[in-house]
Length: 108
Ligand SMILES: [Zn+2]
Image (cartoon, rainbow, N blue to C red; front, side, top):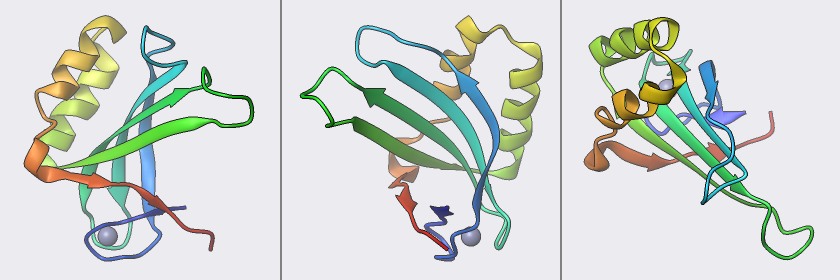
């Protein structure tokens, strides 16, 4: 379960997931829209995984960016209407560095 950085509950849920596939940097690159079912916080999640390191050393980064409800609405619409190729740019325009947080996992 993903931990919400605002209320601390492990109730951050993935409401949308877009798989961008492999690129020069990663073997897996996903964009996510996240919502906390406890406090309602909205965020973008960016997940990157590289399996090019030493064996059994999967490396990944999972970063969150808080967004407001309006941006959440805009991005959910974009996911259903825009082609995958342009989605990353649309998401990036809402990834505010000062709203960034590290996504933590917790077993319930
Ligand atoms: Zn929360």
